[in-house]
Image (tube, rainbow, N blue to C red; front, side, top):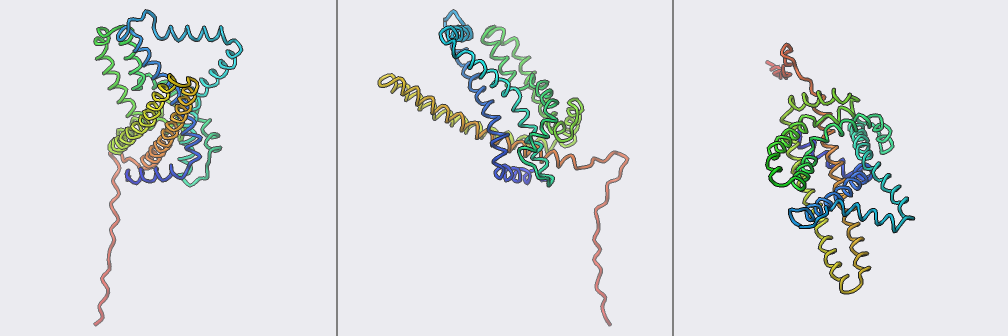
Length: 325
């Protein structure tokens, strides 16, 4: 298996399928990026108002709850539409990224095997493996790297540095276990989506596949990690530049028109969010393509048992031309 060719073919496929990027990359990443930005903002202000950096008596969470209650009291007419919007957004955030992944893998695998498949085909067949894939994601999410970081921040912010140091070895152990499980279950999603395997069976087959083809899996994981770091830098730059603009407009708003500053800051923030989601969506589809191609390649290779003989390479016999007397 030529992993460099897989990377090149995957990038070419990604660039030539913009509809996949929009439907299965951008929309999914728009939801996750919005929640991610909101959660990072919450973590920032939660740490800022915690006893580690502030002497305030009330936590940031209590301030948020108080703000929501006051908003509901003073804006009763807007409460129901906002609640409906929040419920719809929450459902989409919880379900759509998994459906988009299943649909994208279906389209990529079918196109790779010469089948004509588009967005509609992806959604139709992706629905068949949606629930098992969602079950797997919920099962493995506990050991995710960011989930552990969230638990670490909760302990540090609420229980203090002393308790945090006590739990630190456990957190490090969980991070190591999470990394190993993530590596072993690399192909689980693809067994579920492409081969319709049950969750537990897919996890077992993925672990076996990783062990039997550890070199290819490791090399591609390193390449994807490098690509992921690059896109993280790009996303940071996308948010950093607008942040500077917002700070400038915020300063200008204090000396000129406050409403103008808020409008400019909101527009710039929205543009930054959409740009970051689109960049992340491209990498998301590219990642699905790389791992789908890898999965299809490694599953086609037949592993020999200890009883089987390896086929001898074909020998080409070159006949000498007859010499005439």
